[in-house]
Image (cartoon, rainbow, N blue to C red):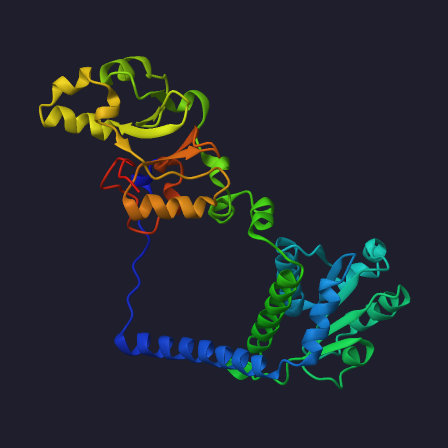
Length: 355
């Protein structure tokens, strides 16, 4: 599709007084909800700790349930638990009593979200859960509610003043549930010993998963990198290290034992020619290479390697094994999406600055 042919969106103009009014209302919403979270943080007590212990020791599935907006919050927290090392599923209370609770087993744990604690569909589900000897954590406003009386652990979020027109739409209450659910999930993840490597394994797509990959996952190997002996002349190295297709612009140089001793880049070649040192082309490349280049290992996190690329304005980083032998090359074009904003260009297209 030709983007130039697309119609331009209509412009929207606001009077200064209208802008101020909108921003004032939005600020009130955010400040009220933020204050509710701070107040909730001060309410946390032993019940929260008991809930975390139950979740951390759960050997089955953590099942979350709720109706309406509370149900949507339960779905989000279930997803957060799953992505941080705790097996979790969302169960709709209505669908549950029509067959969906068949996947529930002893050893599971249920978290029920309901601000009022009087939701009929939810209360009808609880006796079936109890019959399976499944412990229940209730997230609700008050301990006196019907749901709270049926639960083994109750986390009371307290009365909430909903914001917005007439204070009717669930807003502050659902924000409090969301914040509390995140706290449960993330504290539980730490108690379970959840590690970044696991997060990466369960988030293989997108930049989020990319951040937790290792150098091994993204380094160039085999015919995509150039390795040559430091004893060869610059001309011989350039003539014999050519490879087809997209390649890195750096040549890793080794001694007679195959250990990395230096690096020579396209930028290094350009400087020789620009300074009219053409005679150096027939000298051993070890005379003009940069010795002791900064390197990384295959097990390092890609974020650490990207920090080196960004800090030193490099285009490439040699990857070496425990015996200092080159086994790959990390190229900036493969990790450019992880560079800090504004640093997607490289001033020095060489990684040949010595450590």
